[in-house]
Figure 1 (tube, rainbow, N blue to C red):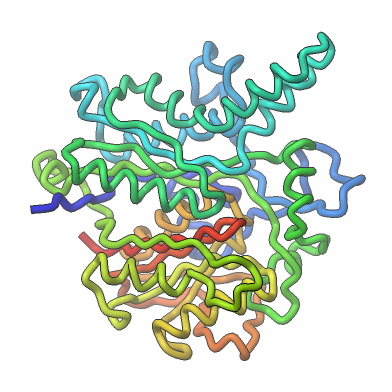
Figure 2 (cartoon, rainbow, N blue to C red; figure 1 turned 45 degrees about the vertical axis):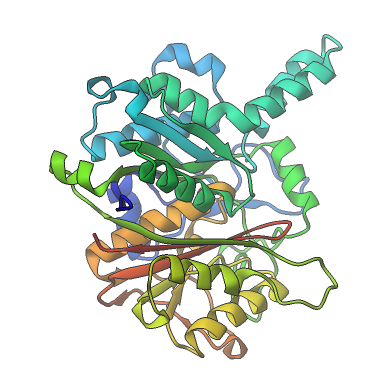
Length: 402
């Protein structure tokens, strides 16, 4: 019999809340964490808003010896891992090292560390070494630092598929649980609100340049004109249901279904792959569309991408066939951290019987979505989380009450 993977711990670092309780309290009430950038002067850049995490001081959460070898992304990830493990009541030093693994994702993060290395090494004429070091750090830091800090020697990896990567990482963690690993730390934290990271994001052409906070990030709205980036995400603890029961651990929910696809070549005339990813996730969970109580949308806020996502949801669930929400309108798009944060939010929604709102958006009727713009009390037993990565990645993850 295939082991069922359940989530027993949540560690959240988001622009509108540090820790699960703080984040959920603000999210359910519609409190946004988006504002003008403070981590550097954005005056000379066309985009000036971001979802920054306030109040996080690494010295308050991590040993001083770790600070010189880490950047903001890694510090947030390490702190969120500590919170997730504490929430799951797991003490890594009490478990066999090879029974614990780490599978995370990375996308835009690592730029701050790389920028620091470039600044330090360019002065010595070593720019090529610096670039190599920064990209090596980019891909390996989260998983490696988490596993080293917590003595986890089981299966470990980093997934890179842009914004879809966070869900892909959780799905890979579920595979490891099914193969016999007792516990896997998964999810993602991304953070690249620094000049180098900002220029890289601007190059994609999808950032909103609107300077009014309430009008900058409007997915599924007629005024949609790009997204606002943010930093943060969520780290989750996955265990086999048997292990969780044996420990008497709280089970937030089960990772029940997963599907991933890749879009066809641009100009081919073929349908984007998101609908198929949804169908694969439902089939994997042995679920029907009517079993899904809410969809957490990818919410690109780029008109053609919004139309494609709305069409995929409509094709599976029918016009206005399922409530849809995008709480990332309160945080910005967190790249690989976005999917895990939506996953954590979905699990909190299941626990509370409440769908959080999509703030500031006036839904365009042409999309045919039942977009939740004010928090909605409703029984939530099953939630579908969607994520798309630039370049054609599509991922869908179905979670349900344990």
